[in-house]
Image 1 (tube, rainbow, N blue to C red):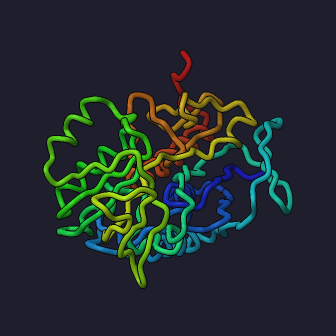
Image 2 (cartoon, one colour; image 1 turned 120 degrees about the horizontal axis):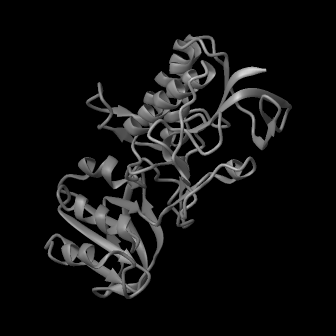
Image 3 (cartoon, helix red, strand yellow; image 1 turned 180 degrees about the vertical axis):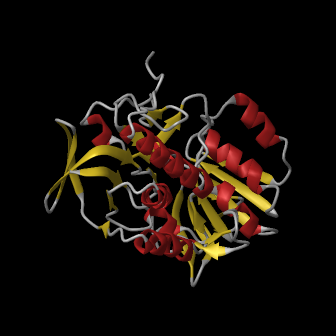
Amino acid sequence: MNDLIIIGGGVAGMSASVYASRYKIDHLIFGETPGGQGMLAGTVENYPGYLSIPGPELMKKLIDQVKHYGVEVKQERIKGLAKIEGGFEVKTDKEKYQAKTLILAMGASYRHLNIPGEEKFVGKGVSYCSTCDAPLFKEKIVAVIGGGNAALSGAIHLASFAKKVLIIHRRDEYRAEPIRVEKLRQNEKIEEILSNEVLEIKGQEKVEGITLKNPYQSSQELKVDGVFVEVGQVPSSVLAGQIGVAVDEQGYVKVSPGMATNLAGVFAAGDIAAIQGGIYFRQFVTAAADGARAAAGVYQYLQGKAPTSSWGK
């Protein structure tokens, strides 16, 4: 039986593995797609130590660091989790593995529009993170798709960099908080396109325009340099429920500041985790910190100094 199994091959999982290795914790890491969503990132300019680095290059450095410690990233699909005597069992599409502890770092997937051009231009003008990529569109024209808090906050943030921001929402009213709507409408750089949808994202080597369902200012074709899809995330927490790990109303795994869940021996890190008293802030740097804290929590747990979670108390 291993001391630890880490499920997730993104920034959080890889960082947890690095720290687990330095703590001399015998562990396995599973990542069906090593690098996770980091492999989809275009240019990363907010990770400490790098002025600018492509997402795939940053992830390769993390993966190489994990392998430097002799840890293999197992590219196996996780089929199920179970609680067993003395620990946990992880069933993959190939075999079963056992460990005394778990770190859940499966992340949260962005909801996609599933329209022509979206997948083609990921990292080439299509982004799912305005906080990450806004500085790349200085003095450009961008479109933000969505009507919730994330979409409006993203549009306001983008307006600090872009020449013009078009926010496109399929309903005639936003789902965001009224104060965000008020702030949005006070910004002269932002144009609202309501009761409309984007049917296609166009371009050659990068995003050059979009096609709308209904005409806007007498045209269905609009020129834009970037498209920010802000229609929410879906936490990958189904596996967590199989062993009784508590999640919040949005499906994120509840954790203490030490990344401990309600279940002894199980920790969570990265986009899947909701820290008690914290805020949702999905960034590479916070995912890395989560992974480090989770590994430290595992070390303490294995030493008999179990971190506690106050969730549900």
